[in-house]
Amino acid sequence: MSIDKDLFKLKPIAYTTMADQVENHLREYIIKRSIKPGDPIPKETEIAQALGVSRNVVREALSRLRMLGMIESRKKRGMILTQPDVMKGLELIIHPTILDENVRKQLFELRLVLEVGLGDLLFRRKSDEHLKKLDAIVEREHKATTQIERIRCEVDFHSTLYEMAGNDTLKRFQDILMPVFEYVVEYESKLDHTSVGSVTHADLVKILYSNNAEAYPNAMRKHLMPHLDHL
Amino acid sequence: MSIDKDLFKLKPIAYTTMADQVENHLREYIIKRSIKPGDPIPKETEIAQALGVSRNVVREALSRLRMLGMIESRKKRGMILTQPDVMKGLELIIHPTILDENVRKQLFELRLVLEVGLGDLLFRRKSDEHLKKLDAIVEREHKATTQIERIRCEVDFHSTLYEMAGNDTLKRFQDILMPVFEYVVEYESKLDHTSVGSVTHADLVKILYSNNAEAYPNAMRKHLMPHLDHL
DNA sequence: TACGTAGTTATGTTCTACATAATACAAATA
DNA sequence: TATTTGTATTATGTAGAACATAACTACGTA
Image (cartoon, rainbow over all chains, first blue to last red):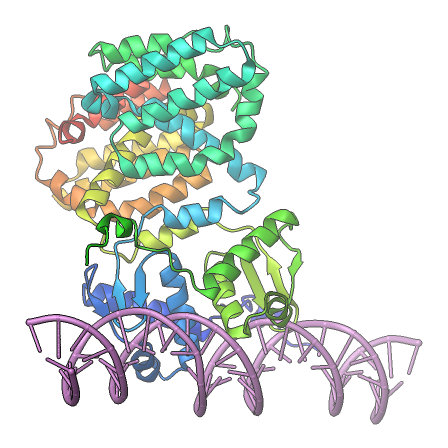
């Protein structure tokens, strides 16, 4: 009874299954051999035998990598490494889970940060087509009669900005994050749209037409000010 | 022989395995029942029987969710839903893979966007401790004699900014992306550090000490200009 | 040459069996 | 009675065998 309890202080051991270990082995294997997309990887049975585990365990590990898009397998050709979509993993977690309120707030902050910092990409990649598209959205917004239509314009406008940035990874990031902001859009609908930010969409477009990259960040900041103040 | 080849144009069928389907079923199940972290989910055998597949297939699907941190399983308690780390999936893909050069470039752009847009979070969350930490880094950089030391200061400085932002998700994002930028740091070491950007770290700190949030974005833009020009 | 057929291979799937850890409950001891 | 100890139960972890299926190979026949 007088056993020193301190001995057990750091007790919580990290329990790893065979599948976890195999997964790590495979990752190392891929890195060390610098296997490129398209290259084949060993057969399931070979892996199982080499690591001294059952094929079942190997398949669990492979199943994970397959989900992330890191490998593909065809019935006879065996398995090959593939170039995964970097944002695939993010998508898999974000979409289905009922996210913690706190995390959702942080993701929204992340979005605000992105939009303010987007300027330099926009000015370097903007095209006449994109600018015209923004014009059309602004006009549509102007003529809009219902709140729903206005919200749709709001979403379209900002989505188009991400398109303009000409960065597929960034665009994908935005697309994944979008559903998280539904509650924000709802919140937005309660705001008086005329007073929302002293800078309107039209003002932003005007700046994009000019080549005044310096003006963009603070213009976007003012546009998003209601949200920023809400932090 | 004269069969219209156009019929086969969109041939690549989406082949889904049982494990894929079970995975989706589980996701739906979790969402529809609005199961919360800590709540138990059915036993493997129950799932297998309910969906009419073998336990093995179920285990492959569960293995995936477990990797993403969506569920945890204890030997007897069965499995419970857990609040996953949103950025876990990203980490799993980014770290091990030899990323495509193009993707790496896009991630680097993403980082530049973030740092420029970071201002409002910084001004709202800055503390004296953080500012002092930045002071210390700037001083260390000033006294640095070796290139290696200067690079370390560079990394520390920007990492500290993300800390200051007080957004764990964002910080985690940055931590994951960091290794991708090693090649950039290397590139940075070849630049003449006195001419790198007309705005120095010391200038940035000065702005952070002030309450002039308007000055931040363009200051950071000028600081990062060598990189921005490299787009 | 062309076409069809059979054989081979590696993944997909199922089934059975056992190991292991955590829990609950009964039994035993002070 | 209370605390410990043993035992049964349960659900996950792991192993191994077997068969299905699709894709590739090669042979054989017209």
